[in-house]
Image (cartoon, rainbow, N blue to C red):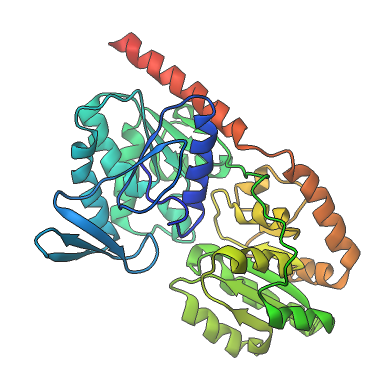
Length: 399
Protein backbone atom coordinates (compact mmCIF):
# COMPACT_ATOMS: atom_id res chain seq x y z
CA UNK A 1 0.00 0.00 0.00
CA UNK A 2 1.34 3.41 -1.01
CA UNK A 3 0.33 6.48 0.98
CA UNK A 4 1.55 10.00 1.58
CA UNK A 5 0.90 10.30 5.32
CA UNK A 6 -0.05 8.39 8.47
CA UNK A 7 -0.91 9.56 11.99
CA UNK A 8 0.64 11.04 14.01
CA UNK A 9 2.57 12.65 11.12
CA UNK A 10 -0.49 13.70 9.12
CA UNK A 11 -1.94 17.06 8.25
CA UNK A 12 -5.47 15.99 7.30
CA UNK A 13 -8.03 13.25 6.94
CA UNK A 14 -6.20 11.21 4.28
CA UNK A 15 -3.74 9.76 6.77
CA UNK A 16 -6.51 9.04 9.27
CA UNK A 17 -8.56 7.18 6.64
CA UNK A 18 -5.54 5.12 5.55
CA UNK A 19 -4.74 4.22 9.16
CA UNK A 20 -8.23 2.99 10.02
CA UNK A 21 -8.73 1.15 6.73
CA UNK A 22 -5.45 -0.72 7.25
CA UNK A 23 -6.34 -1.51 10.84
CA UNK A 24 -9.65 -3.02 9.70
CA UNK A 25 -7.97 -4.93 6.85
CA UNK A 26 -5.43 -6.40 9.27
CA UNK A 27 -8.31 -8.00 11.19
CA UNK A 28 -8.98 -9.95 7.97
CA UNK A 29 -5.39 -11.28 8.02
CA UNK A 30 -4.19 -8.95 5.30
CA UNK A 31 -0.40 -8.55 5.42
CA UNK A 32 0.25 -4.88 4.66
CA UNK A 33 3.49 -3.09 3.90
CA UNK A 34 2.61 0.62 3.96
CA UNK A 35 5.21 2.61 2.04
CA UNK A 36 5.64 6.31 2.86
CA UNK A 37 7.88 8.95 1.21
CA UNK A 38 9.52 9.82 4.54
CA UNK A 39 10.90 8.09 7.63
CA UNK A 40 9.28 8.72 11.00
CA UNK A 41 8.39 6.93 14.22
CA UNK A 42 5.24 4.87 13.61
CA UNK A 43 4.21 2.33 16.25
CA UNK A 44 1.54 0.50 14.24
CA UNK A 45 1.70 -3.17 15.17
CA UNK A 46 -0.87 -4.31 12.57
CA UNK A 47 1.28 -3.49 9.53
CA UNK A 48 4.84 -2.82 8.41
CA UNK A 49 5.65 0.83 7.66
CA UNK A 50 8.53 1.44 5.24
CA UNK A 51 10.13 4.64 3.95
CA UNK A 52 10.95 5.11 0.26
CA UNK A 53 13.57 7.77 -0.25
CA UNK A 54 16.80 8.17 -2.26
CA UNK A 55 19.85 6.03 -1.54
CA UNK A 56 22.17 7.72 0.97
CA UNK A 57 19.52 9.88 2.61
CA UNK A 58 19.85 9.71 6.39
CA UNK A 59 17.21 12.26 7.39
CA UNK A 60 14.12 13.93 5.95
CA UNK A 61 12.93 17.10 7.65
CA UNK A 62 9.49 18.61 7.04
CA UNK A 63 9.17 22.37 6.70
CA UNK A 64 5.54 22.27 7.76
CA UNK A 65 2.83 19.71 7.05
CA UNK A 66 2.96 16.64 4.82
CA UNK A 67 2.33 18.75 1.68
CA UNK A 68 5.06 21.36 2.20
CA UNK A 69 8.74 21.31 1.22
CA UNK A 70 11.01 18.62 2.67
CA UNK A 71 14.75 18.83 3.33
CA UNK A 72 16.71 15.69 2.38
CA UNK A 73 19.98 15.25 4.29
CA UNK A 74 22.53 12.87 2.72
CA UNK A 75 25.34 10.84 4.31
CA UNK A 76 27.82 13.14 2.56
CA UNK A 77 26.38 16.15 4.35
CA UNK A 78 24.64 17.40 1.22
CA UNK A 79 21.23 19.02 1.81
CA UNK A 80 18.50 19.25 -0.81
CA UNK A 81 15.11 20.97 -0.58
CA UNK A 82 12.26 19.52 -2.63
CA UNK A 83 8.74 20.79 -3.14
CA UNK A 84 5.77 18.44 -3.25
CA UNK A 85 6.24 17.75 -6.97
CA UNK A 86 9.89 16.92 -6.51
CA UNK A 87 9.04 14.65 -3.60
CA UNK A 88 6.60 12.54 -5.59
CA UNK A 89 9.23 12.13 -8.31
CA UNK A 90 11.75 10.97 -5.70
CA UNK A 91 9.12 8.62 -4.30
CA UNK A 92 8.58 7.11 -7.76
CA UNK A 93 12.31 6.61 -8.34
CA UNK A 94 12.84 5.10 -4.88
CA UNK A 95 9.98 2.60 -4.95
CA UNK A 96 11.91 0.06 -7.00
CA UNK A 97 14.62 -0.26 -4.35
CA UNK A 98 12.03 -0.83 -1.61
CA UNK A 99 10.06 -3.55 -3.39
CA UNK A 100 13.01 -5.33 -5.01
CA UNK A 101 12.96 -9.07 -4.31
CA UNK A 102 9.58 -8.95 -2.55
CA UNK A 103 6.27 -10.56 -3.55
CA UNK A 104 2.89 -8.83 -3.39
CA UNK A 105 -0.63 -9.83 -4.41
CA UNK A 106 -1.90 -6.32 -5.09
CA UNK A 107 -0.79 -2.68 -5.10
CA UNK A 108 -3.17 -0.25 -3.39
CA UNK A 109 -2.30 3.46 -3.69
CA UNK A 110 -3.95 6.54 -2.19
CA UNK A 111 -4.36 9.83 -4.10
CA UNK A 112 -2.31 11.48 -6.83
CA UNK A 113 0.97 11.94 -4.97
CA UNK A 114 1.45 8.15 -4.92
CA UNK A 115 0.14 7.40 -8.41
CA UNK A 116 3.42 7.70 -10.32
CA UNK A 117 5.13 5.40 -7.81
CA UNK A 118 2.18 3.01 -8.05
CA UNK A 119 2.46 2.80 -11.84
CA UNK A 120 6.19 2.15 -11.48
CA UNK A 121 5.49 -0.61 -8.92
CA UNK A 122 2.94 -2.21 -11.25
CA UNK A 123 5.48 -2.18 -14.08
CA UNK A 124 8.03 -3.93 -11.87
CA UNK A 125 5.73 -6.40 -10.12
CA UNK A 126 3.08 -7.16 -12.74
CA UNK A 127 0.27 -7.40 -10.15
CA UNK A 128 -3.14 -5.66 -10.08
CA UNK A 129 -3.13 -1.93 -9.29
CA UNK A 130 -5.96 -0.39 -7.27
CA UNK A 131 -6.06 3.41 -7.01
CA UNK A 132 -8.00 4.85 -4.09
CA UNK A 133 -9.28 8.37 -4.74
CA UNK A 134 -9.94 10.55 -1.70
CA UNK A 135 -10.05 13.73 -3.79
CA UNK A 136 -9.29 14.86 -7.33
CA UNK A 137 -7.72 18.07 -8.56
CA UNK A 138 -11.04 19.81 -9.28
CA UNK A 139 -12.03 19.20 -5.62
CA UNK A 140 -8.84 20.76 -4.32
CA UNK A 141 -9.23 23.68 -6.75
CA UNK A 142 -12.73 24.46 -5.51
CA UNK A 143 -14.47 23.29 -8.68
CA UNK A 144 -11.90 24.82 -11.04
CA UNK A 145 -9.51 22.89 -13.31
CA UNK A 146 -6.53 23.26 -10.98
CA UNK A 147 -2.95 22.32 -11.77
CA UNK A 148 -2.63 20.78 -15.27
CA UNK A 149 0.33 18.61 -14.18
CA UNK A 150 -1.69 17.04 -11.36
CA UNK A 151 -4.65 16.65 -13.72
CA UNK A 152 -2.45 14.76 -16.21
CA UNK A 153 -1.01 12.46 -13.52
CA UNK A 154 -4.48 11.63 -12.23
CA UNK A 155 -5.93 11.03 -15.68
CA UNK A 156 -3.10 8.79 -16.86
CA UNK A 157 -3.03 6.70 -13.67
CA UNK A 158 -6.79 6.30 -13.34
CA UNK A 159 -7.11 5.11 -16.93
CA UNK A 160 -4.27 2.60 -16.47
CA UNK A 161 -5.43 1.22 -13.11
CA UNK A 162 -7.01 -2.21 -12.82
CA UNK A 163 -9.60 -0.78 -10.41
CA UNK A 164 -10.50 2.64 -9.04
CA UNK A 165 -11.96 3.18 -5.57
CA UNK A 166 -13.92 6.38 -4.89
CA UNK A 167 -14.74 7.46 -1.34
CA UNK A 168 -18.24 8.55 -2.37
CA UNK A 169 -20.71 8.50 -5.24
CA UNK A 170 -19.99 12.23 -5.58
CA UNK A 171 -16.32 11.43 -6.22
CA UNK A 172 -17.14 8.60 -8.60
CA UNK A 173 -19.22 10.91 -10.77
CA UNK A 174 -16.45 13.54 -10.71
CA UNK A 175 -13.88 10.95 -11.87
CA UNK A 176 -16.17 9.92 -14.74
CA UNK A 177 -16.78 13.55 -15.72
CA UNK A 178 -13.20 14.82 -15.42
CA UNK A 179 -11.23 11.80 -16.64
CA UNK A 180 -13.56 9.61 -18.69
CA UNK A 181 -13.00 6.52 -16.56
CA UNK A 182 -15.80 4.00 -17.29
CA UNK A 183 -18.33 3.77 -14.46
CA UNK A 184 -17.99 -0.01 -14.35
CA UNK A 185 -14.29 0.36 -13.43
CA UNK A 186 -15.06 2.36 -10.28
CA UNK A 187 -16.26 1.06 -6.92
CA UNK A 188 -17.58 3.31 -4.14
CA UNK A 189 -16.20 2.49 -0.69
CA UNK A 190 -17.32 5.10 1.81
CA UNK A 191 -14.96 6.16 4.57
CA UNK A 192 -16.10 5.60 8.13
CA UNK A 193 -15.02 6.40 11.68
CA UNK A 194 -13.64 4.47 14.63
CA UNK A 195 -16.44 5.12 17.12
CA UNK A 196 -14.38 3.63 19.96
CA UNK A 197 -11.55 6.13 19.59
CA UNK A 198 -13.17 9.14 21.23
CA UNK A 199 -11.63 10.09 24.55
CA UNK A 200 -13.97 11.09 27.35
CA UNK A 201 -12.31 14.20 28.76
CA UNK A 202 -13.81 15.68 31.92
CA UNK A 203 -10.96 18.14 32.40
CA UNK A 204 -11.49 21.82 31.80
CA UNK A 205 -11.67 22.85 28.16
CA UNK A 206 -8.44 24.19 26.65
CA UNK A 207 -10.29 27.24 25.29
CA UNK A 208 -10.65 29.12 28.58
CA UNK A 209 -11.73 32.36 26.90
CA UNK A 210 -14.57 30.63 25.08
CA UNK A 211 -15.58 28.78 28.26
CA UNK A 212 -15.86 32.11 30.05
CA UNK A 213 -17.84 33.64 27.19
CA UNK A 214 -20.26 30.70 27.12
CA UNK A 215 -20.97 31.32 30.80
CA UNK A 216 -22.13 34.77 29.69
CA UNK A 217 -24.58 33.28 27.20
CA UNK A 218 -22.42 33.10 24.08
CA UNK A 219 -22.68 30.24 21.56
CA UNK A 220 -19.76 28.81 19.58
CA UNK A 221 -19.77 27.74 15.93
CA UNK A 222 -16.68 25.78 14.89
CA UNK A 223 -14.86 24.82 11.71
CA UNK A 224 -11.75 22.62 11.68
CA UNK A 225 -9.81 22.07 8.47
CA UNK A 226 -7.45 23.53 5.90
CA UNK A 227 -7.88 27.16 4.89
CA UNK A 228 -8.06 26.52 1.14
CA UNK A 229 -10.46 27.40 -1.67
CA UNK A 230 -11.99 23.91 -1.47
CA UNK A 231 -13.22 24.50 2.09
CA UNK A 232 -15.35 27.56 1.21
CA UNK A 233 -14.54 29.50 4.40
CA UNK A 234 -15.20 32.95 2.88
CA UNK A 235 -18.86 31.95 2.49
CA UNK A 236 -18.87 30.80 6.11
CA UNK A 237 -17.68 34.26 7.16
CA UNK A 238 -20.36 35.93 5.03
CA UNK A 239 -22.92 33.71 6.75
CA UNK A 240 -21.31 34.55 10.10
CA UNK A 241 -21.91 38.26 9.48
CA UNK A 242 -25.64 37.58 9.06
CA UNK A 243 -25.77 35.30 12.11
CA UNK A 244 -23.97 37.80 14.32
CA UNK A 245 -26.33 40.56 13.19
CA UNK A 246 -29.22 38.43 14.50
CA UNK A 247 -27.44 36.78 17.42
CA UNK A 248 -24.55 39.02 18.57
CA UNK A 249 -23.55 36.51 21.23
CA UNK A 250 -22.16 34.06 18.66
CA UNK A 251 -18.45 33.31 18.30
CA UNK A 252 -16.95 31.54 15.28
CA UNK A 253 -13.94 29.37 16.09
CA UNK A 254 -11.71 28.59 13.08
CA UNK A 255 -9.08 25.89 13.64
CA UNK A 256 -6.48 25.25 10.95
CA UNK A 257 -4.07 26.88 8.57
CA UNK A 258 -3.48 27.20 4.86
CA UNK A 259 -2.98 29.60 1.97
CA UNK A 260 -6.19 31.54 2.71
CA UNK A 261 -5.23 32.35 6.31
CA UNK A 262 -4.46 36.05 5.79
CA UNK A 263 -7.31 36.45 3.33
CA UNK A 264 -9.73 35.16 5.96
CA UNK A 265 -8.27 37.41 8.66
CA UNK A 266 -8.71 40.42 6.36
CA UNK A 267 -12.22 39.37 5.35
CA UNK A 268 -13.36 38.98 8.96
CA UNK A 269 -12.07 42.49 9.68
CA UNK A 270 -13.64 44.02 6.55
CA UNK A 271 -17.01 42.43 7.40
CA UNK A 272 -16.85 44.02 10.86
CA UNK A 273 -16.99 40.69 12.70
CA UNK A 274 -13.34 40.31 13.79
CA UNK A 275 -14.26 40.48 17.48
CA UNK A 276 -16.55 37.44 16.99
CA UNK A 277 -14.12 35.30 14.95
CA UNK A 278 -11.28 33.44 16.70
CA UNK A 279 -8.38 32.00 14.68
CA UNK A 280 -6.27 29.50 16.67
CA UNK A 281 -4.11 27.90 13.97
CA UNK A 282 -3.47 24.21 13.32
CA UNK A 283 -4.10 22.07 16.43
CA UNK A 284 -3.56 18.52 17.61
CA UNK A 285 -4.42 16.54 20.71
CA UNK A 286 -6.51 18.14 23.43
CA UNK A 287 -6.73 21.53 21.67
CA UNK A 288 -8.10 19.78 18.59
CA UNK A 289 -10.60 17.67 20.57
CA UNK A 290 -11.70 20.58 22.72
CA UNK A 291 -12.50 22.69 19.66
CA UNK A 292 -15.25 20.16 18.85
CA UNK A 293 -16.31 19.89 22.51
CA UNK A 294 -16.69 23.65 23.08
CA UNK A 295 -18.85 24.15 19.99
CA UNK A 296 -22.63 24.24 19.78
CA UNK A 297 -22.46 23.54 16.04
CA UNK A 298 -19.77 22.30 13.65
CA UNK A 299 -19.96 23.64 10.08
CA UNK A 300 -18.31 22.10 7.00
CA UNK A 301 -19.31 24.35 4.06
CA UNK A 302 -16.96 22.83 1.43
CA UNK A 303 -17.37 23.55 -2.27
CA UNK A 304 -16.54 19.92 -2.99
CA UNK A 305 -15.72 17.46 -0.21
CA UNK A 306 -15.15 13.93 -1.55
CA UNK A 307 -16.00 12.52 1.87
CA UNK A 308 -15.36 14.64 4.97
CA UNK A 309 -14.53 12.98 8.29
CA UNK A 310 -14.70 16.08 10.49
CA UNK A 311 -18.53 16.15 10.85
CA UNK A 312 -18.37 12.57 12.15
CA UNK A 313 -15.59 13.57 14.55
CA UNK A 314 -17.75 16.48 15.73
CA UNK A 315 -20.64 14.13 16.46
CA UNK A 316 -18.29 11.82 18.35
CA UNK A 317 -17.24 14.70 20.59
CA UNK A 318 -20.80 15.81 21.28
CA UNK A 319 -21.54 18.44 18.64
CA UNK A 320 -24.14 18.41 15.83
CA UNK A 321 -23.07 19.26 12.29
CA UNK A 322 -24.09 21.39 9.33
CA UNK A 323 -22.53 20.15 6.08
CA UNK A 324 -22.62 21.07 2.42
CA UNK A 325 -24.73 18.90 0.15
CA UNK A 326 -21.64 18.71 -2.07
CA UNK A 327 -19.92 16.20 0.25
CA UNK A 328 -19.56 12.45 0.39
CA UNK A 329 -20.48 12.25 4.06
CA UNK A 330 -23.90 13.65 3.14
CA UNK A 331 -24.54 10.29 1.42
CA UNK A 332 -24.31 8.34 4.68
CA UNK A 333 -25.51 10.84 7.31
CA UNK A 334 -29.14 11.90 7.52
CA UNK A 335 -29.35 13.51 10.95
CA UNK A 336 -27.45 16.68 10.24
CA UNK A 337 -28.26 19.99 8.61
CA UNK A 338 -27.38 20.30 4.91
CA UNK A 339 -26.96 23.32 2.64
CA UNK A 340 -25.68 24.05 -0.85
CA UNK A 341 -22.17 25.50 -0.47
CA UNK A 342 -23.13 28.64 -2.36
CA UNK A 343 -26.30 29.41 -0.39
CA UNK A 344 -25.01 31.84 2.24
CA UNK A 345 -28.53 32.86 3.26
CA UNK A 346 -29.63 29.27 3.96
CA UNK A 347 -26.36 28.61 5.79
CA UNK A 348 -26.91 31.65 8.01
CA UNK A 349 -30.54 30.67 8.69
CA UNK A 350 -29.58 27.17 9.82
CA UNK A 351 -26.68 28.34 11.99
CA UNK A 352 -28.87 31.00 13.60
CA UNK A 353 -31.58 28.42 14.33
CA UNK A 354 -29.14 26.17 16.19
CA UNK A 355 -27.49 28.91 18.25
CA UNK A 356 -30.95 30.27 19.14
CA UNK A 357 -32.62 27.01 20.14
CA UNK A 358 -30.77 24.65 22.48
CA UNK A 359 -33.48 22.05 22.00
CA UNK A 360 -32.75 21.91 18.25
CA UNK A 361 -29.02 21.55 18.93
CA UNK A 362 -29.56 18.72 21.41
CA UNK A 363 -32.07 16.84 19.25
CA UNK A 364 -29.80 17.07 16.21
CA UNK A 365 -26.91 15.59 18.12
CA UNK A 366 -29.00 12.91 19.80
CA UNK A 367 -30.28 11.58 16.47
CA UNK A 368 -26.92 11.98 14.75
CA UNK A 369 -25.19 9.98 17.45
CA UNK A 370 -27.56 7.05 16.90
CA UNK A 371 -26.43 6.97 13.26
CA UNK A 372 -22.82 7.54 14.25
CA UNK A 373 -22.75 4.62 16.67
CA UNK A 374 -23.59 2.19 13.86
CA UNK A 375 -20.64 3.21 11.69
CA UNK A 376 -17.60 0.95 11.36
CA UNK A 377 -14.54 0.59 9.14
CA UNK A 378 -15.33 -3.13 8.90
CA UNK A 379 -17.82 -2.42 6.09
CA UNK A 380 -15.12 -0.67 4.05
CA UNK A 381 -12.67 -3.46 4.81
CA UNK A 382 -15.13 -6.14 3.65
CA UNK A 383 -15.66 -4.33 0.34
CA UNK A 384 -11.91 -3.98 -0.18
CA UNK A 385 -11.37 -7.69 0.56
CA UNK A 386 -13.89 -8.57 -2.13
CA UNK A 387 -12.12 -6.30 -4.62
CA UNK A 388 -8.68 -7.71 -3.72
CA UNK A 389 -9.81 -11.32 -4.15
CA UNK A 390 -11.60 -10.58 -7.42
CA UNK A 391 -8.56 -8.96 -9.02
CA UNK A 392 -6.10 -11.49 -7.64
CA UNK A 393 -8.14 -14.35 -9.09
CA UNK A 394 -8.57 -12.47 -12.36
CA UNK A 395 -4.83 -11.87 -12.56
CA UNK A 396 -4.07 -15.55 -11.83
CA UNK A 397 -6.55 -16.60 -14.53
CA UNK A 398 -4.79 -14.37 -17.07
CA UNK A 399 -1.41 -15.87 -16.15
